Image (cartoon, rainbow, N blue to C red; front, side):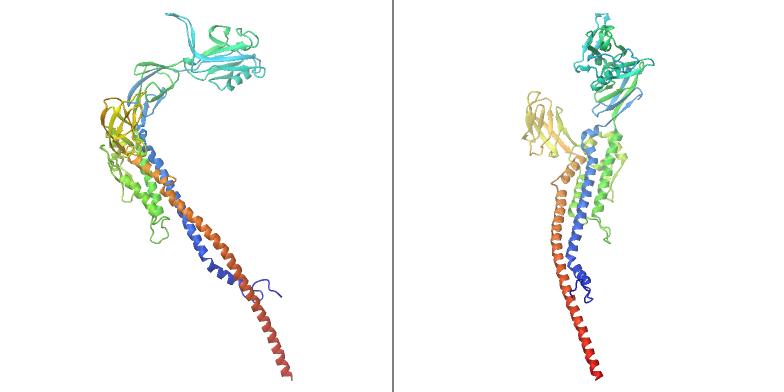
Length: 566
């Protein structure tokens, strides 16, 4: 009889023997798996490093742009009367403000109807915007309505589907224009109120009607909604004015100003005023100053962000003598290089003519632990005494030796240095400037000259506002710490950068190990099948030999018994 289960015939533990043999055969596969896990851990570690660098870059971005140092704080003498903000371009100083009148939107109301479902009429409404000027006697002048050319007329069709009071309201609102409608119940009747969405005299309303009943001048049908400010009440002027359109009237340093809106962006350059109430007869202060606290917070964020980056990189590369807590990237040259490059930027002095050229001068210094610390007293002193140099310490900036030559921008390719400027043609709105920067022909664009591609001055942009032709002095460009770090991290994090290459290398190794593991698994399957077949045959042979042994033993015993009986 054939043996169908290994070990049953002879008692030989075929499964155990095969399992033991396969555990030895699988050792190369286990080594591959361990190596793959190590690579996967490093991929994750590099992901953490890149995330930490990205977070640090976000923090330094608030200091790498010169406009960030234009932070200004605006203080209102009474926030119930007005509030204000500044965009960084306002002139620091104090202004006096008086609000005599707030801007208002015109409101018109229709005579009431008993129900909102009452039919008003059908036809077409045409709503126009403009400025209404009342008639005057001194000098003699007739009333007038001057169209607002910035707005187009609104045409609304009223038909049998929307000819009720509520239907007219909905039709006006559905136009999604700068006019709205609402129904107000005054306790007796329902009255349609039409309101200009925009304040100011130039947004007064004129409503013309093409009434389907054939008479657009009477006070019946859709003509009830007619409102011509120059017409006679009851004949083309059937709505009643609840509120006239008004301009905001206010004074800044005694100068009378009239604006259509309560939000004014063009009265004080760089300042947005939000008028809230009147204070006629008195003045309130409006103070604009550099927001030093906001800049301090940005510098603090810079320090905190570096310390978080340092923590991440230290944890990834740390050494533990027991080996239990060593970092995943211990001994990784690229990881060490990243922090070395970052610190190299932060510990060197800037090449500039400014009085502040190092981070230590503004209170930022390295501790023995490798962390950054901030001395706020030092920072405050620099804010008070060398504010412009503080901005240049972090941002990309430049100084020119000629008062009529100004710095206007740079690119990531612009290198720090002092460059000679020579002008061969002055620019204008119709003619491009011509000349050289650093002795190389620059690109002209109206008043601007930009450094040549490939030159150290590549991307350096200046404006020549006039003056003589020929040599125009120098422009000294400095890339501050935040600007340099931003550029460094961008290089490290770019898709073809060193970190991406290292990560891709790990991933490539993982793919290679997966292929090797697949091939090894196929080989192990074949080996296990061979072992199992071999030991199954052995089990069969042993079982057969045991059966033969038993038979022979029985026969010998029988022979011996027969001999003894004789």
